[in-house]
Image (cartoon, rainbow, N blue to C red):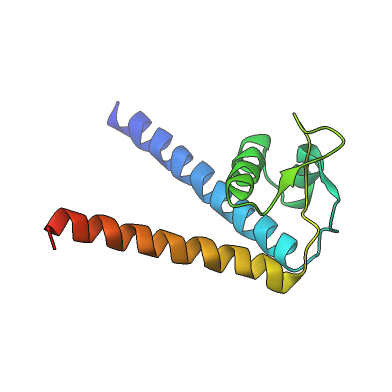
Length: 116
């Protein structure tokens, strides 16, 4: 029984690792403009490109959407995602701005908890 649970944990860790790897590679390709600006991101094509299943690709796309590194396509806003139309420096600015706000938030919460 413990062996089966360990196997499921290993599978979950592998799936998580693949999701993180897919996210990292896709993010870098967007920032480096390997994927053309305004190009539609098709999940099945990304699965082939990154040798990943549909779940890790969707996980990566959702994370990138939450980070504003992909956007909903104007042609089909309810389903399709597309690469943004921006320069590398602009894209990196988005990431650093989000990081700065996250740091400020954590600092504010920590100070609030300590009563300082």
